Length: 342
Image 1 (cartoon, rainbow, N blue to C red):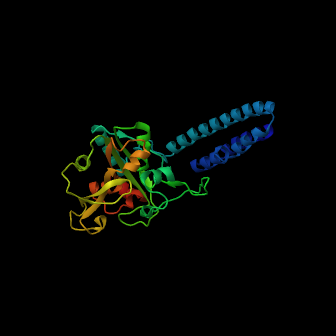
Image 2 (cartoon, rainbow, N blue to C red):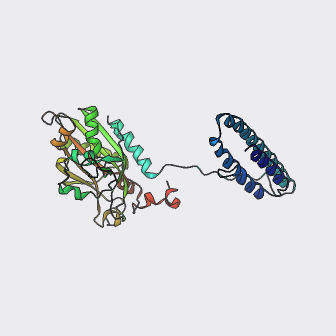
Image 3 (tube, rainbow, N blue to C red):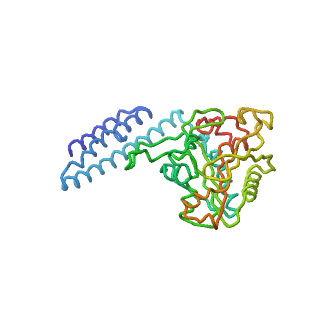
């Protein structure tokens, strides 16, 4: 191996003497110093040597690598000087602008939501994206036999429990953190949970398989629907910096009772009906309600003493309304023409 290493050094020095351009120099550097280069191939074989040989050959390999890198740097400097003298490289020209990155629109609004709720005394929590069936469904009053499971098309993970049942899912909502938060912090409690969720569904202008939600939860004595409506109004007016036209209607969610839904007037078409609002002039924004007693019990809280509300809002749809975006698929599309606008 010592002979091989010394031979590589000789080959590099000889090859460098014949280099005539920057492209050839780069290709030679990749050939010998690249991740899959000749030098690395030999260095990977050091692990098979004896302890004594490893030390000696390892030191030699590092020294030879240092020498080769120095040779390349020397030739790079010489090549640049040659290009300057021949007029092929003008060092007085301005450099190329390095484009700086920026926040995704969903991240921008998510941070604004965090600031808004922090100002109202809410904790900002995070939860696992790979969730157990127990927290994703069972603790939220959605047992296996319950038809409400059909409301959420789910990505199950190839992992089975002792009963030979698939028990791990990519979370379908941020609601599992309701029980996790109650178990950890007890009552009274104020928290919001922003995060990514996953649904196994067909995509269109207002549906996506990967999306972002914000879960809100408040538990205390004498909490009512009035508290819920007040918090939702404060959130919407804080994000849009204006009074928002909303309507409240009954809704069904297994983990709240009673359940309600909040719709807001479409800010993309301003009521003229577009794909973003399903041509209705209204956008379904928030599912909410009073926390079901069974969910409070699952979190270790006595429903005879405490009550609370919970709500879930799609951050993607919130961003669409804020910036006038008419197709939710832009967020995960990776098209720089879209992203560079923010």
